Every structure is written in structure tokens, then in C-alpha cells.
Image (cartoon, one colour):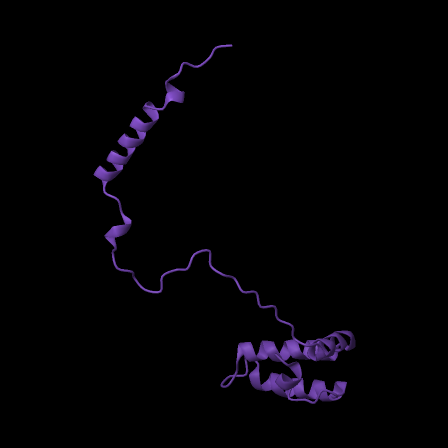
Length: 124
């Protein structure tokens, strides 16, 4: 938000021009002015006037207007891509319970028949 545009004054305006522009706009947009009044617009006008009438605040504001706007753009990749639409049910990803039981049984038998595990553990 540019305070000079809000008050309708040039950037090299003197104190008298700033005060005159503020008073004119304040009469028009004051919340008690009646028709055409705007609380939000009045707040913007008052904030602009308070900043531009103080020499120190005005100097800091002018520097901030001239400073280049630097925006960092960080690209964040999702950990896993989210589906853009509902995917169809694909049963080939699921293993039935009877297959799991069979695989566990085979694994248990394999471990039971292991010669290393069948030897007694040495006691020292």
C-alpha cells in the first residue's frame, strides 16, 4: 500500500500539502461523515498521514519503497504424491489370509529344520 497514492500527493510533497490532503480526505471518509464514509478507508488515510508527517518515519518509508522486493521461493516436494482423483480398487495389491498363513507355516518349518537351531545352546 503506497501512502502517497492513498493521500493523492507527489513523493516530494511538503508538510503543508500532506496536511491539506489528509484533512480533505478525512472530512470525506470519516466514519461520522454520513453517506460515503468508510472506516477502513479512513484508517488507511490516517496511517498514511501519521507516517508521512513524521520526518523519521517518512524517511524510513521512502527507503522501503525504493528497496527491491525479494521473495524467496522454496519448492517443497511432497513426501509421497497425493492422488489427484480416486483410484480404482486394485485387489492384486492385497494378499489373502490363507496365503499368509501358508507362508508363515513354511517359514516356521524351515526355521525348525535348521541344523544350527536344533543344536543345544552351549552353557559356559
